[in-house]
Length: 116
Image (cartoon, rainbow, N blue to C red; front, side):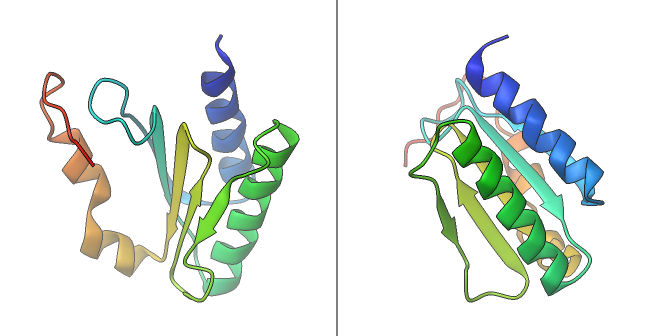
């Protein structure tokens, strides 16, 4: 198992163990150059979302990705953790429904490319 796939599985386990809701992993390889994988999850409250994002950052750092970044630090209902080849979005369920990231990425035809 390659390093990024192993890290993805660790992040998925952390989110599951810490009661994240509706966790979805989306493979982006071949669809976009922004990352190989995107994980989308929901938290039950602003504190839960913050705690989940902190645990994800800690796992990135333990895995040697020391330059990961958190976007949405001032937001109570959304966090994005950019681990370079793996991006993690943690939303409040209402905000997640509004953005529908899973739908956007799952509707791409595999041969289509998104250039950002």
